[in-house]
Every structure is written in structure tokens, then in C-alpha cells.
Image (cartoon, rainbow, N blue to C red; front, side, top):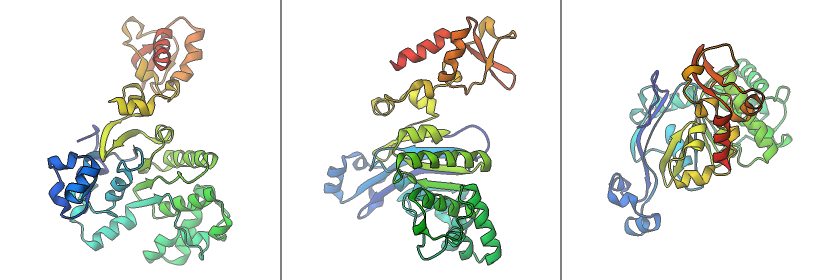
Length: 345
């Protein structure tokens, strides 16, 4: 199980399996589950999409799951809110076991705790933007005045203030995806699930939407599980990243851990073209302070990226202290920065 120290997690998934086919439960935990997909299908008529995955997501964390098509990532996120029921395993939301939830309780969790943003916007074409955003509140029975006011507020948050009376076909693809994001936010959920929401957008709009998510997270501090096949997107958005292959997690770590210390050749191949100077931080490359742990010389935050350290170490011969909340964690100097850049080349 992959667990982070600190307060209890908002989302906990335990030993999740998803097997499609006849008598799927008989495949769980057996040697057959490790057979190549074609061989397993021929032998049993089953396909394993997710196999024995466990992870925790902490309150306010952005947890990104990335992998190639067919790796199981979309199936995994759809088990978090039980769009797909697991073949085996547990899904806990604030210690509430979704696998034990009856239909009414599950609907309540989906309405109030979890919202999802899909790749395909799914907007109602005959309804105004404000009504599309407020649709979930309408289903809950919220009065018209309140739900419209809420919809207008979240439209402002996603940069669509003033567009409430328009219809979906009057908006660009990027604007429609902003409506989808606003609709997810309207219920003020604790947890946001994103299933490759920006993959159909052109690169410029995609970058705008990524910035929008970053800004919203800074302001709202939601717990997010974000699915993508794009490593650059994962590195930009994720507090932690899980690399998925053949239904399993092959590595989970911070962006800098994944780039600096790939767990195997598969992850190394994913990250080989990533500019390390834009991902690695002072914390990742620092050395023990030793005699340099005191004094009045320059300091940097442990999250300062190597790219920003380059001009600093070029201008001074002294070590730069890495300081967090007044404590010296270590030091960086030219040799530390050069070592990180040499590894990249």
C-alpha cells in the first residue's frame, strides 16, 4: 500500500481489481492474472484492466495517474466513484466504504462529495450555459435563484463570466471544457476526478486549461485525481504521479522523484526527454550543509528548480543554503547544479 505520513487520507483505494469477462472474480489474485492479455482472453474469456492497485490521496493533493492507452488508468478513476464497480477491493472516501454503500447513499456521495470532469464535455445543447452548470444543483432540488447565482459564481472562477446566457454551440472547445469544469465545481465537491479532460483540445487551449486547474487548486484546495497520457501535463499538475502499465502502478512519487530516480526502464523511457533543470529542485540536488549550515549568505527554498539556480551559482563562489521555515536543510553549489545537468546530457 502506498501511504503518505500525516492526517488520514481523503481517498483510499485498497487492492483494487477490475476484470471483465465471465466469472471475473475467479481471476483475482491467481497466476492466470499475470498471463499476457491475449493468452488470458483465450484461456478464460477474461481481460484484466486493473490488478491489485492500492493508493491514498491526501486532502488538497493533486494525484496524477498517467500511462499509455490501455494501461487501466481511466478504469481506475471510474472505480473511485463506482461508475465501474471493482471486481475486488475497497474504495474509501473519508473512511466511508463505497463498496458497502447502498444506491441512495452512493447517489448522495456523488452529488455532494465527488464531481467528475470528462474528456467529452457532455453539455446539454438545448440549455443555456448557466443551466448546464447548475444542472447538478437542479437535480438536488436547489431553488432556481440560488443555483443560478452559484453557477454565475463558478463561471467567473473559470473565466467565463458573462457567458451564462449563451448556448454550448456558441462556445469554442476550450470554453466548453471550462463549462464542464464549472459544472463539476458548482456542487462544491470535496473531490474532483479528471478523466483525460484536455486531451481533445489543441495545445494552446490545453495549456490554458492546465493553468486554470493550477490556479483553481491554489484558491480552492480541492482533492484531485487527474488522469492523463501526457507526461508533461502530469509533471506540471501533480503533487505525486503514479505511472501505470498493464493495470499496475510501476512507480509512484513526486515529479522530481520520477524524473531523477525512475524505478525501471519503462519509466526511464517515459522521462528521458524531460528537461531535468525544469523539474529537479534544490531539495533533490542539495548536499549536507556541514560547515556551510550557518552564516548570512544567500538562501533558497527547497522547491526552487535547478533552472533558477543556474544564474545564482554562476554569480557567486559560496554555497547557497536551502532553507525551509528557518531550518537549513542542506546546501547547493556549482558542483551540485553541474552534476544534475551532466546527468541530463
